[in-house]
Amino acid sequence: MPECGAAGGNTSPEVAFLYTRKMSALDVQDFIQQNRATAQQAETFRGYWESDKHWEARREFILRNMSDFEADRLDHLLSLSMVWANNVFMGCRYSAALLEKVKEMADGIVVEDAPVFKTRDEIIKSQQGR
Image (cartoon, rainbow, N blue to C red):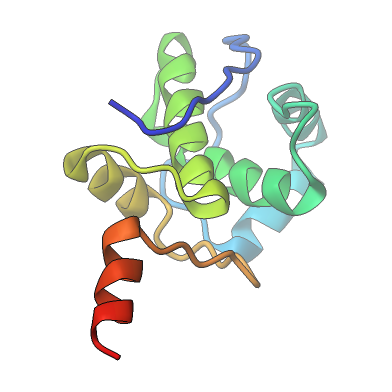
């Protein structure tokens, strides 16, 4: 069970799945430039609460992994993107298996100045070491 909530997004299945391999950061930018309709569709998945920094990272996660999901499973990809973003930006914790999966899916995505979170146990341990 996650330690913080996540909201869903639009799960329209009409997104085109044009890449058959994982995309690098440059591939994502090229994809957006060359596939305006799909990029605009992806924009519908943005939550109103997401900052530009948060959305750009989550959009990259979505676009990089789209080819691994059938159109009728897009909601699963969007859920995984929220798990990853919630972990990175808000420090939410999930099961080890789920975090391992989303971290593997996000391999290569660089989030500059991502917040660093410490657990209560880490804080107590660091204070006891003084």
